[in-house]
Length: 328
Image 1 (cartoon, rainbow, N blue to C red):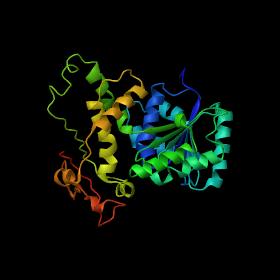
Image 2 (cartoon, helix red, strand yellow):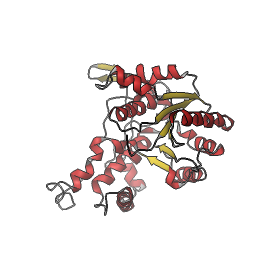
Image 3 (cartoon, rainbow, N blue to C red):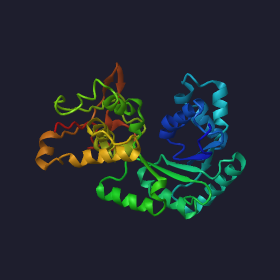
């Protein structure tokens, strides 16, 4: 597509569930819509052994999240897979990253991707500091030839102290303008429509204020369990996995003041003002208004489902919450 730089999209955790279920299907849709540049390559990186062809079979041809799409013609699947490759890499071993650098150089030479790399960390949070450090150690954060971008998903630390520490470590490897800390929930179509509904709708805009709104309730209810994410989820729980990021972002979009401009900086500033105005919960508030619970085995739409403690990767004695309503 004209106007979009040539690039290599490097997905760390390329053999994982997030990549197969969300990332590659999304990239496939972008490809079918003509939103990827002509000279692009998708490179999966993980410690699992795959050949390029075996990896394409896993994430494209054998991926029901792609093959079930209405635009998944044989022609589109083949053309899309032609730009997908794989690099086996122990992601915690710095001395192996020279192999990645050499692979990227060969991709640049063959596919004319101009040294522009997006590094997407679809990995456990334990690797969020390690991977950027290893990339920088072999010069893969240097922008003397082509731009470099680092994408970090939540959870961004486990508390304020660890989040600040992670941020400082990232900034020793990449510059601020190279780092994207993202919340994928904001990419949902309904969420993206909030700003239009609030500020561009002549019916709602005059009424969307404290004079006409008594209270706000944000609910995120899912029918699925943790599926293959038990190892991650049992270290996180609903509060960290959903409330302090996804749902607070929704609160910000619902309650913030109109931004001066429609750009990222102006929207961020209004969100920050909103968060600063929220009253922190006291210990008494927490005792009276916060509950925590777990789902147990039951039937959902007539289908038997396992309880949380029976999910793969979950401690049989886990006290991690999957249910966390806040009545404050």
